[in-house]
Amino acid sequence: MDPTWTTTVLLVPCVVVLTAGFFYLYGWIVGLLTKTSVRNKVVVLSDALSGLGKECTGVFHKGGARLILCGKNWEKLEELADDLANASDPTVTFPPKLVLLDFGDMESMPDAIEEILDCYGCLDVLMLNNSMKVKAPAHSVSLEMDKLLMDNNYFGPVTLAKGVLPSMISRRTGHLLLINSIQGKLAVPFRSTYAASKHAVQAFFDCLRAEVEEYGISVSTINHTFISSTAAVNTEAASSKSFWSLLYTKKPLGVSPDEAAAEIVKTLNNKKKEVVIAPSLPKVAVYARSFFPNVFFAVMAAGVKNTAAFEKM
Image 1 (cartoon, helix red, strand yellow):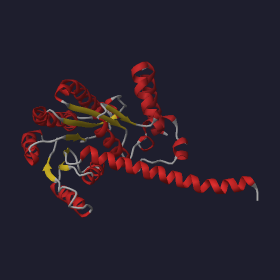
Image 2 (cartoon, helix red, strand yellow):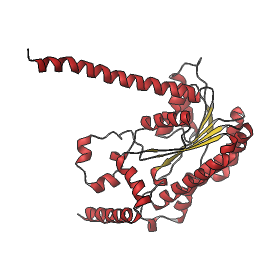
Image 3 (cartoon, rainbow, N blue to C red):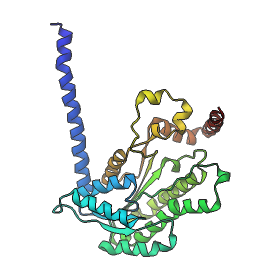
Image 4 (spheres, rainbow, N blue to C red):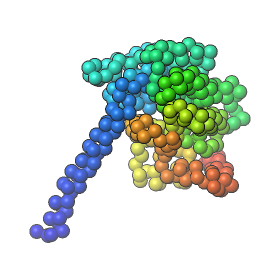
């Protein structure tokens, strides 16, 4: 028998076993981090009904967290709580508390904050993951829509954080986790108000981090690209697209909810101040915006022209 063929036959099973072992070890480590980072802790999710919110809810629930799940729809919150109860061991998990929360209705915020604090009398982790998106030319977006975006993406998270901070300061512990878009770092055409709201909330929590450090409170921001369950894209299909498509198409630059949830778990454990979840191209764009702004602006403008020309074809 050919020695090369024999070597190949022997190596393939070894590679398969090693790969399977790697993924098993990775899953075990993530599970261990989850248990150590949230077990018995009071964790609030500001939007438990989003794709990422549901993913994190499942991970935190299995990790033994005392969850307070917030959302706009009471029926869907109850369905989520039932799903968690049916999929878990009640002897090692806690039934979640449910709170109606709508950042689009700022007048209801004081009551919602009071209800959140009344659930357990305190909280350890506040995960702010609400987001509202609009894609349109700046001149076509109404002032009412601008205000609604700012309420959902800036004033809502800021108001909730301010509402729970006195409790965290009095206990001298806590972790504020802002799940923000990468557009809190750079602005992309046709998302003017969305990018403005994300820049604003990023700046607020960057300032807040320094202000509350002396009280033992951690502030982390996670900037991600588009989150989608179909984020995994075939490499060949992605490579066949133009440069502009890679910049403006969501899917090739997206991350899946489970990938984002794994990064959130690690951030809760290591208390890293800032995390960017993105492929190489968006990260390069962030650095280009800082160090080569004129080049970045030229690329963005060329991309708009290229998109307009493509739409006319």
